Image (cartoon, rainbow, N blue to C red; front, side, top):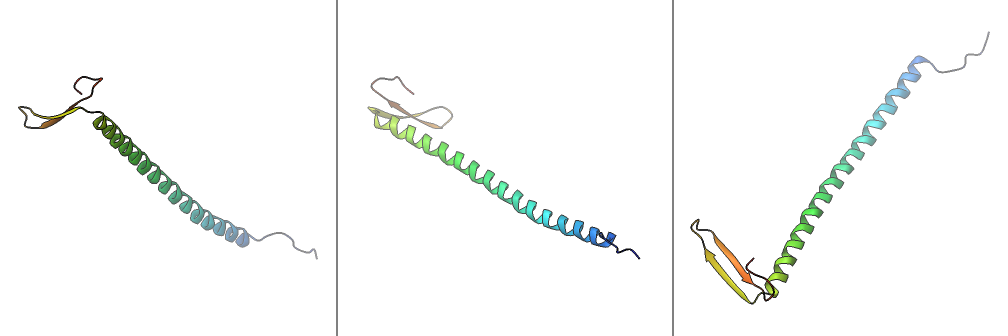
Length: 89
């Protein structure tokens, strides 16, 4: 009789199933990591935009020589400031 070598069908199916389970676990963790990276990147962009806005307002107000609040017909007040080298903003 010849010696049988190789794998049985059940062994191959078991290996494929285990590989599939490990792959699903790995890629779901990887997908969560990508989601967190995207969320942090968006928050960083929002924070940077806010910081730049505050810095610009501070720079404009530091150089202002006169600050006036105007009331329009809509009832919404508008803050107007004059700088020595600029007209009304």
